[in-house]
Image (cartoon, rainbow, N blue to C red; front, top):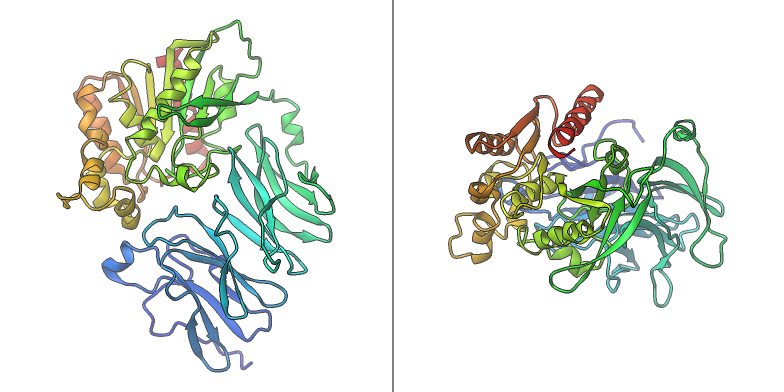
Length: 487
């Protein structure tokens, strides 16, 4: 090697890593050092903004030629990784424009593209080749948790096998050390720590053993909140899983104010996540019961359940939410006169929408970075492909009945005349996913309607509140509002 730099994408008006979210997972060297693989979306202009069709390209160092390895595969192709023997694996979605399509695990073997999870009714989050190259370990949501799975890609009939099970999340696969797989694990009561999974176990679930104890000293002085699984019958007769988080010293003979937690995404999994902002344990520790339903649109309950939300943001999902709060409100320990709904992003959309249809169920609302006006959202977000898919098309397609529903019946701004409940609105000035004008519109509407309302605005925050002092203000304002309107 001469040491000279070579631009392997010279003259191409594309990006690698993918802007704005791509990282080192977008490019790799082949094990023999003779090739470089990279991920890019080979489109420009308006084609770029409505597409998710990334491909994996292979650059040959010797010949200086580039080959598209995933040509004809129309959705996201991401996360290329080689086994020790040089077999390529990657994650792939089928549908162009759909960021939440089923994510399948592929390999390229003997010149053939093989979908290892084609018959598996779930979606893959992340994966890692085993050290010997005979297995692939991966993480996926299942029944309200994130667990570890494996598949043997070269078996006669490759079959997905679940390795771990419990009320916890496996978040990341760090690596393998002999018979141990090193992962991070958390649950709603404990922040992530490093664990090992014993691969020598003959039967699943395998032993998951804590390796790091960074936060133990903190938890000695923090009471845990009981987390229970609850099954709710939806209006269309389906069983819906919900997590219920109770105050630390829960007494069933008392009555508690209760919060409906509305998840964002809208296709983000609602598992045993641990968040430093939307911390359900912290909410429960303030004396609230929290119900967090795995409503339509969430992975971990089959591909059909996951896909049902697209084009139906304000339809069955809202019925799922109301079914959840109505179900738990029947419990003698729930004060049905002190119910609230809170959420961010799509969860904020849900709050805005519920504010117009809840029929006096709730006494307060909190919406963070929520979609308030689907029509203006279409033209202002940085993810045009997202709205184009989720709303079934642009608002100017008047003959597109499904799209028109998204901009009328399922548009929260159209329900403002029915708003009658206090609402706290939070938004960031650097939120390009759901721009700040969405929050401003909602706050203006609430104020002009004479509804008790408050706006918490962070000019230097994006879709998330990341700066420590801002996060403290967020939490303080959140709980002060609940105390003022729900206690």
